[in-house]
Amino acid sequence: MRKLKLSTKGRYGLRIMIDLAIHSVNDHISLNSVAERQNISENYLEQIISPMRKACLVKSIKGSQGGYLLGNKPSKITVGEVLRVLEGDFASVDEGADSDLDKNSIQGCIQSIVWDKLADTVYGFIDSITLEDVVEEYESRNGAEKLMYFI
Image (cartoon, rainbow, N blue to C red):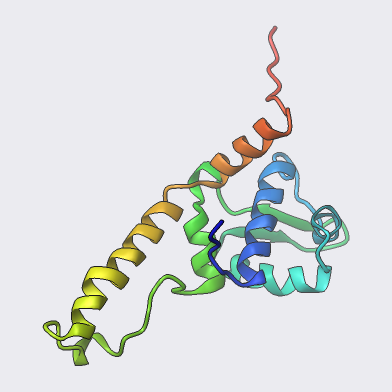
């Protein structure tokens, strides 16, 4: 199986977001509880959640009863948004400044035929997956059913 290499920051950040999507439906969640569920150092999670808070992907509530909530509905946040905040422009290959690149050179052809199309494909894919999609798949694999109340 081929694997895409992402930093732990990107991988753990996505886990935080999915954990919040599952557990913070009606309440804020402490970072400590996320750290315990995900088996990740709370100190490292604090470093990861900071840029996500600045990007409004999560909201924080201060105080002894504080914690974190998603900044929007899980259906409105994409995997791509999360990864771009934490990883930056990870899908591109830097072949030099675009203005300096001769589009008719081998390097220019490779840039437009391979690297640019690869980036478009990767971003198109990760931008098509929402946190809600991942939560639904997680719940499906783990037998969790959405509760329905009838009166």
